[in-house]
Length: 139
Picture 1 (tube, rainbow, N blue to C red):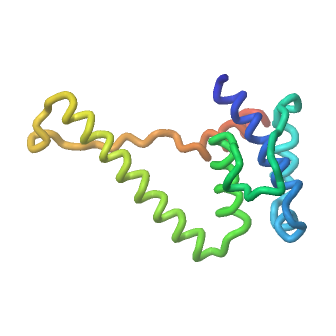
Picture 2 (picture 1 turned 120 degrees about the vertical axis):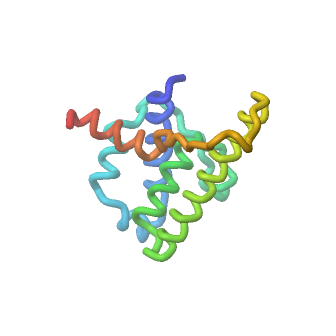
């Protein structure tokens, strides 16, 4: 399945999870965001979430987990938690990217002492979501 199809399924899962959340959580999520999820979700996707079990133990799509992380950092956590989370996340991503470059260089047999490492930033998952939303709206 293509990324857009997976994202539409993830929108359906996130929308369903938020609808089943406590009222206190639902009130913190902007209506525009919920409307966007509902507008863009895959209406034919059958959601298989058991709300008697912890959400962390559910089989969710990777995009669903990413969107839920975004919802948490943008709407539910404190400013301090958000800053800490974003800094830790950036460090992990940079370390992973650097490690991938080093492994590629080793595989190619290049001498790391004579090679400069340049990080190439990939489009982040949340940038894809934002781009999708604005493309959908025609902005």
